[in-house]
Amino acid sequence: MSMVRDQGVMPTRPLHVAIDARAANGLSGGVGELTLGYAKALNLFDPDKFIFSLCVTSDINQEMLRELVPRGTRFVQVDTDQEKRIDVDLQLWANDAIKASYGMKDGWCSARLNALDSTDLFNSHQFDVFHGLLQFSLLHDVPMIYHPHDLQHLHFPEYFSKEESQARELMYQLFCRRASIISVASRWIKNDIEKQYNVNENKIYSVPWVSTAEKIYNSSSSAIKDVCDKYMISAGDFIIYPAQTWKHKNHLGLFQALALLQREGGPVPSLVLTGFVNEQGHDLLDAVVQLGLSDKVKFLGYVSRNELSLLYQLARCTVIPTKFEAGSLPIFDAFTLGCPVACSNVTSLPDQADGGALLFNPDDIAEMASVIRRLWTDVNLRCRLIRRGNEVVARLSWDAVVQNYGVLYRLARGEMLSESELAGFAARFVY
Image 1: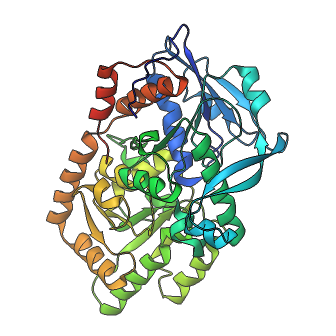
Image 2: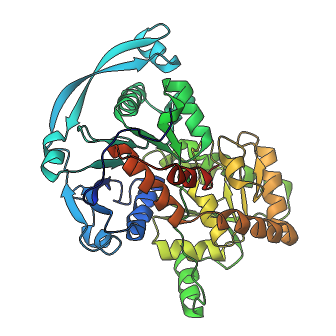
Image 3: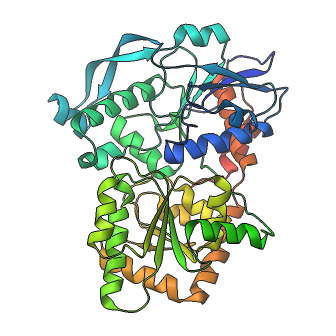
């Protein structure tokens, strides 16, 4: 199927796009950071062609968001406890998870889901397109761009309860079917969705996200001292790993690698962790003690964006031991801020890093420890990785992201697009 529409809607007014900003509450990890970054990028759209509304809940700091978005952006409250629910019939593709949960055979099967319905609310605001940045999207009849982000529950079902896995599977398949366009961050997850959900490849578009980090130039010595004193760290003397404590983030594997280095003798890096310690992370606090790393590991919790940028710039390196990612913002953040990286060799990460990071098997603790030792002790290696990381992120920009979504919004709405517009989309960098 070509992206060119032979017949479609001719634009007569600015296209009104609703952005799902419910993840901008600071509790949603990478999705929340993407939401904030994209909210700021809305300023790059032509206001004569696009206008925006942000769908938020009552716990969102609207004043903070208003400072990011274009003047005149509307805010629409969609508190889910006040929305009505309806039963929705859907067709499921019987992948392994569906077969196991429902005893289905190969092919399609029918299911029913009780879901929140925002149809009346959306129609009252006359949205042309809904951009669903959150996986657990909202029911409506507006043309939608949907982000499932990843299908981790199918690859690591042990990290979810049976109820959580079933809920994700039903919701993801429902919105992948209902969406006009599915947007993903990498070719790897595009291929995964095609395979797991039997989705036509022409419905899925890969638009890589861009770092939300901003390099803090000429940071005053007092600002650096304040951060170092606040968190009791020394510049250039720690590893940073920014991630909520979800199991797939593999903090425990990183702790075990540091413990192995400690047993083997030689330098043992200190580790600084940022991101919320959620309900899955409480056991990690005990693991630090049991592994004898109490003086080496610091949990800072959620830090401000400015502080996080400074921490990247002060760290000797970033280590990302995750077991599953559709794409890793911390890789691009570290590249942007000149912090050398070692990361897992899983999913899309090798393609994303593109030679700018040392790779390791996240299930091989000895290999991870060896890579950490190399990165920690070899200054020439770190310099080479910094240079390559800079080359990788130099190909990316929020301008390109905005151009791509401008095309997708018009496509979702049903507009006719020229071959030159589509060629521009295809030419922009993806991984």
